[in-house]
Image (cartoon, rainbow, N blue to C red):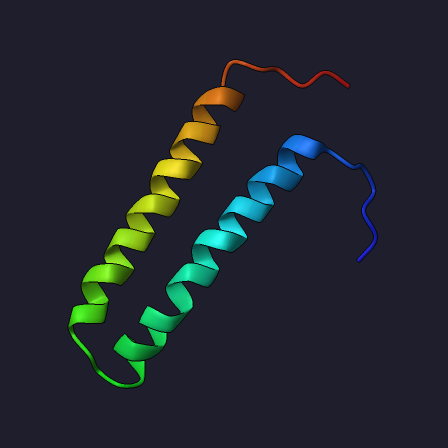
Length: 68
């Protein structure tokens, strides 16, 4: 997919989200496929980390208005 507009801030956001999700992949496999209940705790921690990161970025973008 070709990038229309390159934005370093969005690229950093995207990279961080991808890193957080990648860190959760092993625990997701252990929980959903191997039924290891302890992996669920680690997954929830990962979900909270993603939510916290998205919330922090959201607070940065709320006051900004995009003008066309």
